[in-house]
Length: 145
Length: 105
Ligand SMILES: Nc1ncnc2c1ncn2[C@@H]1O[C@H](COP(=O)(O)OP(=O)(O)OP(=O)(O)O)[C@@H](O)[C@H]1O
Ligand SMILES: [Mg+2]
Image (tube, rainbow over all chains, first blue to last red; front, side, top):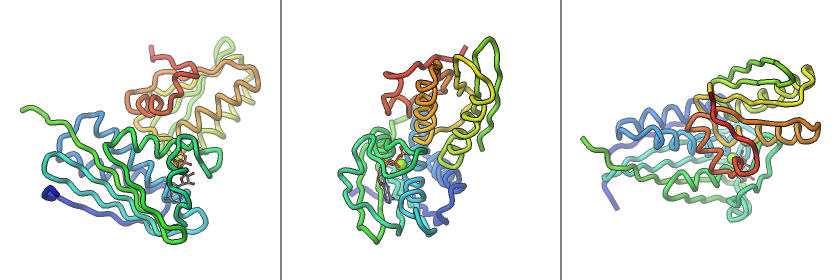
């Protein structure tokens, strides 16, 4: 395991206005690695996906807290963990399929597909009735100079 | 925050979205655009996205919704001018293979 260089954590209520707060805060924290515009866009996008899922699916019928933890490892490795204590996912494999959704007409079932294609590793741990933890790892390119 | 503006000319309704299109803004984008379509009878809908500073999968649902509405009512639907970050989300979804996407002018 590589050494942790820096770490931060945010805890906020499951309100949709906090989607923008979460992705901007994680983007600002990741800025210390001097990511490319594309990498920064990818990071904000996947945070938005995971946090939105926690709000609309995890806490579909009540409100609760969401925790986002970011760790930076040696070698320009960024790890984002999004945790909710909501209703959980019965079948994670099915949930990760493109276009699978249990949501309404503002959902397209592409969130996990986007998280997978914009990061290097996606892990989903979920217990029905207890909650969900989504962990994403992204390796940032070396920058010259 | 998402800002929605419209312009109608020669049978084309152009709806421009500027700012951040996420779950928080998706419902409003769908409803306002549907209202505009009802208000302006037109043969073509252009969704102009050059002012977007952020978009996630919620934007895919908005585009899919409008694509369906236009198909049902016999209108042409075009997505125009998506900046790089929204375009990466569209590309990951495969939508540009099945709909009309145009670069901005
Ligand atoms: N945190 C969560 N808690 C409970 N269920 C979840 C959670 N995250 C995802 N899911 C389930 O997994 C499904 C797929 O999620 P995914 O993000 O891929 O698509 P979506 O959220 O339905 O649509 P989109 O992300 O395109 O708006 C969801 O519809 C939901 O059933
Ligand atoms: Mg989702």
